[in-house]
Length: 366
Image: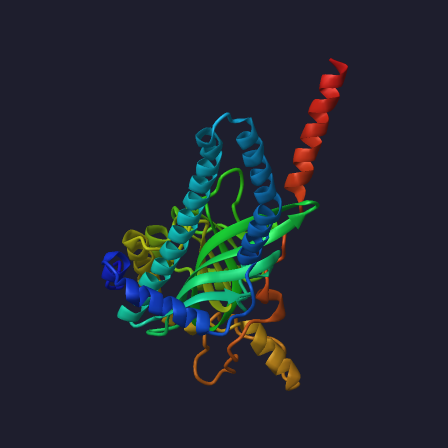
């Protein structure tokens, strides 16, 4: 049976706001210590400097040239008026952009406050173990909404930049991070509903780590688990848990790593859209009720290691959960071979390069 969605009050996302309260909150944010200037801020400063140093003298020279051509003072003033109007329009657009950004941050702050959570505008290089958090440069999470009951949950938008020669690409993600009770094996669910030409994930994994599950789960997700942990994955992903992922998270990629569960999407998670929050709160609420079962999982390989260290027989019961009384209880944790999935090779770019080379050769000899 599907649990009811987590309730929340979405009115702060859409209700009218007091302009003075928005300005006061913006001033409070400016007074907070920050982790440094973000990449987007630096780019904006550079762009403004280029316009001021390069474009402004060009515009002035064009205006003077047009003024010298005109036969009357009125015709000479027309270019000046047009330039003034363009500058005024640019100023208004910048002002509106700043005001809208301040209003968005204030609404998200009020939304978090109303629902017993907290708001953080930006965290540079967030210390999270998920696959997206250690790539590229300029890594930062923005508009973070955090809750601590019944367990720690963080909703945020994330971006990083990858440099390739002279070109750079900025990748943007939305994510939900849920703190678990104990470390679990590194398991990835690659949702098929959000894939294009192949997986949309920023990492690939060896095919030998794929695990097929019962029912129609494979129609919605490709599951990867460390080799030798297939039985553990079956313990964690029981039919009722698989049903909850299919019903609530079929458009989200999922990663379990250490004692965290991450939900990934390539759209904004922290937003002013109440429907997005209803979807996310419903998804998290449906999964929370099953995490107690995951907390009982224990890695039997740690039992063998403990017994070996105590000069006891190395054989151990094959139990991916806390064993009955009288048997050695494994400590919470994961053996080294289960902590991280093995990454796949770069065969897709190689295949594409070979195809291009093949087409070029055929075209040359035809």
